[in-house]
Amino acid sequence: MKAVFMGLGYIGLPTAAVAASKGIQVVGVDVNPEVVNTINRGEIHIVEPDLDKVVKQVVENGFLKAALKPEEADAFFIVVPTPFKQNHRADISYVESATRMVIPFLKEGNLFVIESTSPVMTTEKMAGVIFKERPELENKIFIAYCPERVLPGNVLFELENNDRVIGGLNQESSDRAAEFYAKFVKGQLHKTNARTAEMCKLTENSSRDAQIAFANELSMICDTAGINVWNLIELANKHPRVNILQPGCGVGGHCIAVDPWFIVSDFPEQANIIKRARETNDYKADWCSNRVIEASKAFTITTNREPVVACMGLAFKPNIDDLRESPAKYITSRIISESRADVLVVEPNVVSHKSFNLTNYTEAYAKADIIVWLVNHKEFLSMPVDNNKIELDFCGVRK
Figure (cartoon, rainbow, N blue to C red):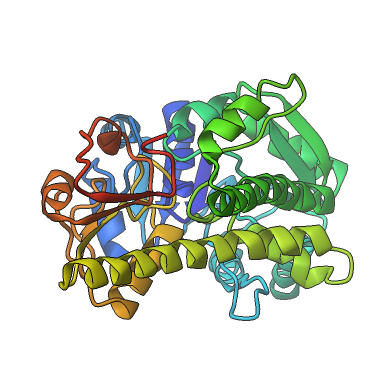
């Protein structure tokens, strides 16, 4: 069995590596030469626990190689980003570009699977692209959609142990895709059609977004009411049928902050709660920014000098280096541009950043007058409390 994975990012590389670790001959394709060269050295370009060991092993054993272009194989997997455009409509251009790259290498009996989170009917659209270029392949290849459902920071375990939803364009495609995933997935493989599988992925992330929106809205209410939201949620969750999530400074990442808009843009009249949840979570980042800017102004009035503000964390969630759609990054940018404070930027999981000058977290805490906890990184949890500093905790570091 030989497989080509188009895209070697936060999902593509771990999936390719896990498949290769089960004896599948894998070619990972990425348009970035630096990524290709890094992987071919047996190294990785992202932060994910234990992934470096797996990649090193499968590269050294000859089961994984990276390349700039695809080649003939038995199965092809599209694992590229699907961001949204300015109007919140899905941008499937990366999916289409990757699909067009593999079209010349497809042959009868091949499996073609899209893993990228996509709007409903994307799989059918890509099938149309394939068959327009290669009409002789119609009804001769197997096409399916199988979305990832992993948690950054625990990807390797969840890739193998989580259930997967597999939606083929026909029953034979679902069966053939399930045969492939059974080679490395221990969880159950649930077969359905492509549209249902596409909507299932969007539904999962929209549900999470709505639950987080409730917690974020609650945190803003509690701030006005003078109530400790962390204590409140802990007490409310003592109820046997209540499970409120933890609030934060917004919602980020490549899934939850993006996918609900795919439903809203395609079904604007029906997706009212989904849209409202998305707006609430986006607003929470502005609410946090305003709180910090107001605290900076108050500090200046009281002390007659501008404060030093430490923005603690840039990633979209704890203990990873992924900054995609990060509300913490957005908040930091607003504080830098809209306040007169001296802003220190901290992200312990990133060595350098093209837009921010990064500061060590202990140094930043020591220098700052105002500490802004944006991400609940493990490094922050054991830091001592200095009562002479103003601390704004938006993620529960001090709860």
